[in-house]
Image (cartoon, rainbow, N blue to C red; front, side):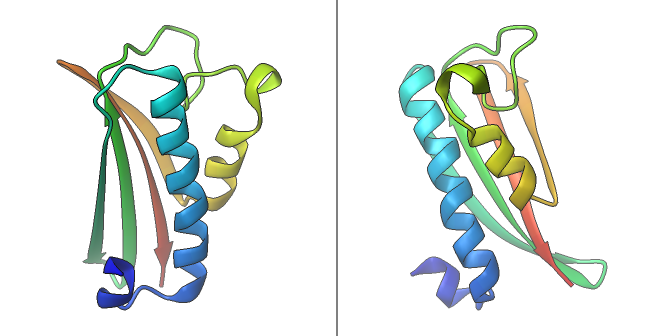
Length: 106
């Protein structure tokens, strides 16, 4: 497994699996294909961060949440990402949207 090769601590691995599941599920259910998952293990400023990015070809409608869905209608994915990530957000770019989250350790 990639995260084991990077020596990511078990706590971050567990959280990362949940965050990946939420972001990928959102891209599959609520966006347009293709969906692409990217992971990066970044070291800097005395800490390490696992960055999770999921890009899709969907639009990001105004007033929507991080995951692009209404949590009252579809679950609590955004709350899970917010609770587990040290930082998270959305980037709109030509061709789609990237939703990202970082999980870090010191």
